[in-house]
Image 1 (tube, each protein chain N blue to C red):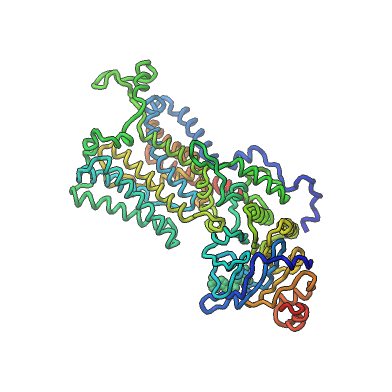
Image 2: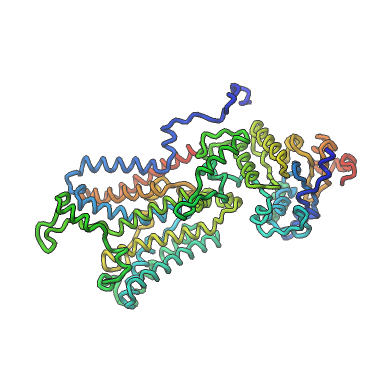
Length: 375
Length: 264
Ligand SMILES: Nc1ncnc2c1ncn2[C@@H]1O[C@H](COP(=O)(O)OP(=O)(O)O)[C@@H](O)[C@H]1O
Ligand SMILES: [Mg+2]
């Protein structure tokens, strides 16, 4: 047999095969995201440098868009690693925004109460998604698809019933002087940016009511939330025992259970966290726009999943990286806004999206084979 | 050899019956398992071996019968209870997660933590050091603690699962067909691991339907046939041929009765 043809193994261990550093570097979930980020920035620096994309306003523009993607990508990433999907993220964004609007504007609650109640409600719906998936054993794809429709339906029904319209405004006025609203809709670092403006590092308005003020006057809380959630998600996943349970639950739920991992609890908590991220997104958006619309968040679930897949996570669960997902979101934001700056027809963004998604999935499958040694 | 039989069994299974609706999977099976011994459970497919050890590891509640662990009757409600009592089970396919590193697999469900700023973080250094050290004891030289389990051979995976169970203090280690999917060399690695574990004083319950694997490491042999047992033979009281015939089923029952020398 094959054993006979082998030379006698060295005393150390014949099983240790030298693995090239390159190959080792390849076996990282973040690889695709890193390569993609470098490629995308190189491309736009070369071809769209003068478009205004890389001045203070331009940077802030794509940073905000990327941060939006990041917030929902973190939740989708951890959930996907835990072996589940949530297709109701987009509807949840619309639903949460509308809930805040109805509570604070229609019902006249203080904004902080509207926000807190909305968070509790949305996280409970996330938990409900999780419980149904676990109790019935149905694929989360189907269960959350149902919630995609249920939540969107309510998001359209309630404002029409209560206010006879599908967009509710006046949230900014209602939030005036509220202590919680600025955590989502405010900005930080205004002093620094004013100083940068005064020093001439960034442009200032030449005339108008804001004359002398810098064109970028602070970092929106949306970006702070995005960075905070990415750091939290990354530490949780890689540095805590709960993170190990997330990997285990998605890698092989049965094996994890046999080893005493509370798989059900992990999955339900990840559904709740995904809902939490969607609600953060919605709250920031509502505070920025000052209004809630029934069509907000459309298709966001797919954008989140695509960012996560570009970031190296396997659709089958058990493998992935929050940093990778964040890079996926960055690629997403830079390309979407970059094409706009470069004056490219925006419908081509969708073409790009499809192509990069396919490329990422193929790359991930290849990396998976390398890790598990299967052919 | 005889001195072994004198010490007390760690686990006694008394007249275990298990019915699944109309199916009688186990019709009264009794065995005693001793520390530091390897107890082989043999039998054809469908004989009830897996069902039997599942009653031992808390997966199934026996329909009838008694489980005595360390002298006290036990009533396991869940696998967790059995695990906490010191009964570890290594399932054939469901032991390891291929995409996760060896060290993450080794500590899965029992991760060491270290507090930093009051937050319990994973103690990765400890996990890695212990994993490398325990793997070396079992004769597996890892490329590094981050090596994915998927890159290990089937035999090595079984060995990781076994050494993990032993490291976490298993008193009884149940192995459900650990060698059935393995090649010659990997099988001998697993058998060597069983031998090492037994010498540390752990009671091993080893399920196989390969007589040669059983004879290589077994101290006692119990053959299951259609949910029943003909009794337990000790090493040296039974020849390979007799064991083989017993596995094959009814024809040779008369001669076997003699061979088992009244232990039936
Ligand atoms: N959960 C179950 N429900 C119904 N029948 C079962 C169940 N588990 C096992 N059985 C039946 O019990 C018998 C013994 O099965 P098993 O213990 O798996 O055999 P072995 O492990 O020896 O191959 C088989 O006839 C099987 O169909
Ligand atoms: Mg079996």
